[in-house]
Length: 103
Image (cartoon, rainbow, N blue to C red):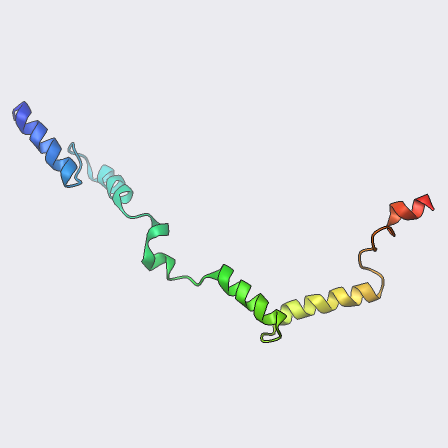
């Protein structure tokens, strides 16, 4: 094969997205993986899973307005409220340990 034919073959491979030099099957697997579209840009994959951030934001807004009940968060709020009633909550500003030592 002449130099001119080699140059034409390399140019053809670059134009059509093929490998410039002959490679093994193992190396072609790497080439195939690198030439694929990235997974985070593939609509089939990104549209498969629900949008957790948006859904949780919407559910929190609905819960705030009383249109959705999240029993787990209701339970956590109730436990926090009962703890505050027993005196287990945070002290108000200026009533902490350090402030009580100064008096």
